[in-house]
Each structure stands twice: as C-alpha cells, then as structure tokens.
Image 1 (cartoon, rainbow, N blue to C red):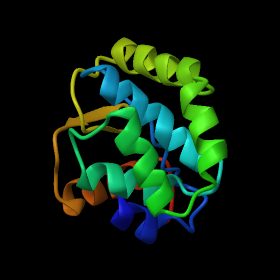
Image 2: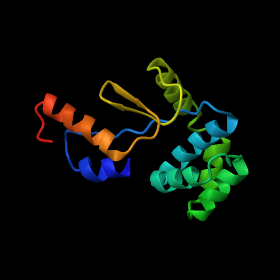
Image 3: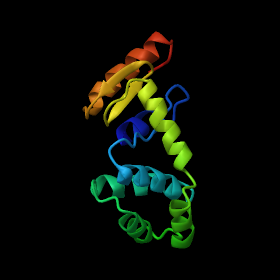
Image 4: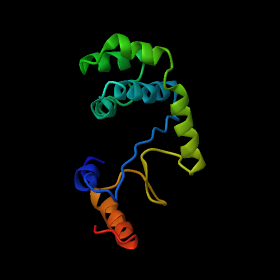
Length: 139
C-alpha cells in the first residue's frame, strides 16, 4: 500500500482508501476502533504499522500501550477506545465489506476488480495502469 501511495498519491486519478474488516474477534474490533482513535490524533499509519507488527495482541491494555509508545495523548486515546467513539464506523465498514463479498484480509479493490490476499506491488500497478488507460488517464 505504501508503494501505491508513493507512486500514485500525488495524482488526482488514484485514490487510496483504507477500510477495516474487523471480523475475527472482539480484539480485532477493538484494534479497528483503536486505529481510528489514533487517526483522531493524526497517527493512523504509524498506529496501523504497530498493529501489523503485533498481530494477535489486541487486548485493550496492549492497544493502549501501543498508543503510549507512539506518544499519543493517552487520556484522549483511552477515552476514545473505552467509550466506543468509533464502534459504529467499524461496524459500518464491516457491513460494507460483507456486502462487497469480502471474506478475509487483505482484500483490495482496484475499481471493481477484487484482489484477495497479499500480492506484490506489480499486481496492483498493472491493474491501476490498466484502469487509468481505460479511463483516459495519463498513467
């Protein structure tokens, strides 16, 4: 995803949109909520990366420790997570994913083409370039 953002992030033709698909456990729901709480403080991607490095360790206590390690305002973060500030947003994204036929992560869409599983950058690049050409973009 970083390569896509680095390659196409400055263009008006490509939009990278991240959606949570918290379907595994209560911990995955808390992790999805926590990343939104981190985003409230401008730390979405750093927190996302910490979660990726610590997959499966998603108790509320560990999620709060990750926030503290990133120097987030812990009181604000804890209130956000404990209060369920983003719970409905997480549920809405889960429902949206299910409606689009998502059943696992990662699942990526390039327009309407669904790609399931981790793939190399070149797979996405080829589809993006194909779509840009089809839509008259400059690539």
